[in-house]
Image 1: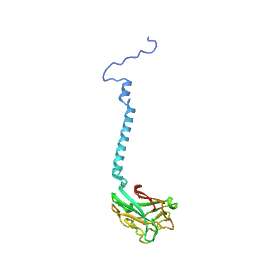
Image 2: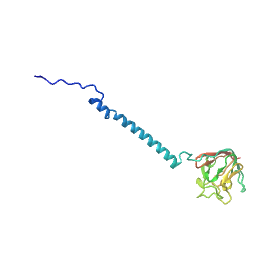
Image 3: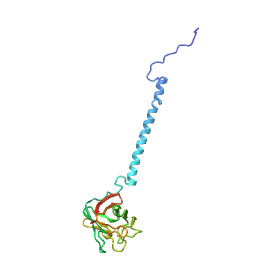
Length: 201
């Protein structure tokens, strides 16, 4: 008669007989690692597909904004106009560099030193600087027909061309020693193509 629990029998060490631990390993003991690896690969594939689609659909492989043209050399002057008012006419010369589409520029006039005002000429090209259509900020520009001259009327501002306009003496009279800063701004990029600081004689 045997007293107490029966002794555990050892399973034979046979290559075809597996114990419980070996069975768990075979049926998914490393399952957690496989799931994480699968998720990482899935995310990687999704990122690559999204990048390829964005390049095709939106053209991100190309430059989104046109680069600003370069005006390598410019000059400016204040000259007397036909009405006898000294230094009221502004001329900005393009002397060297890239041609510039006039529709893509604004001309900013900082006359703060002279009369405490700043204004911009917009909506180019134009034959007349109309207060409603072509002026932002202070209306210091002569809006009479024919006062917008040179490349202000043309499609392209290129080397040898001039932007020529007149400031109204009643709105901003320039006296000897008064200073103006004129900037030609490329509106698609915001780049300043020309900056001239002029002093009235």
